[in-house]
Image (tube, rainbow, N blue to C red; front, side, top):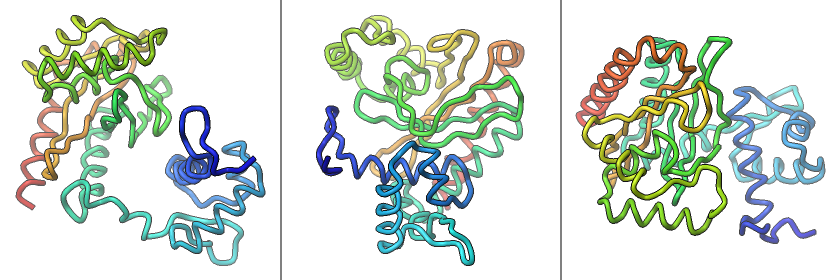
Length: 258
């Protein structure tokens, strides 16, 4: 079958496989061989070999000298940084996330709007054995998670309701489908508080505390959250909310002046 033929969801296979390969490097944080990529993604070896060779030719992967492994190149590392408004924008965001992780001891999640979905774009896991876990690039309905609720707060109520109707019409049987009135109430709470807490909204015994991370580029913003088991979050929820908001406020002030 031609790898350029779209799948049922409209995604071109070769494009999807390229992104899966790059995201595997992001997940593993290490050099990978062809065999490790094949095993990690369950893709045909011939396809992986061809795609890795193409990415090398285009300058997005480098071969590690003296080995049969590959790593993302500097070109790939800097690709897209302009979307965060500063040359070292992603590095600054990651530094703040690491500081939050070290301070709170919980998972730190970063996400963005993707149509009617929330897409997780960066994750720092908690060192605890019992912890909040997600896969990078995983999506959830934007109306059904705390970070998504916060990313809806800049929209008017009419625009929020339209987003909810669109998702509910497209996914009428989705287990996380929610009524407009409930989503609007949550969005209003998020606007008032500046943060939104989800305690067991998606997964029982797990919660998040989320807010928005404004960026100085065309009104862009990300969502950022602290995630963990309710048994720990409930004990320190006020302190966690305060810590998250203070870190984000300090980041935004520094970022705007840099």
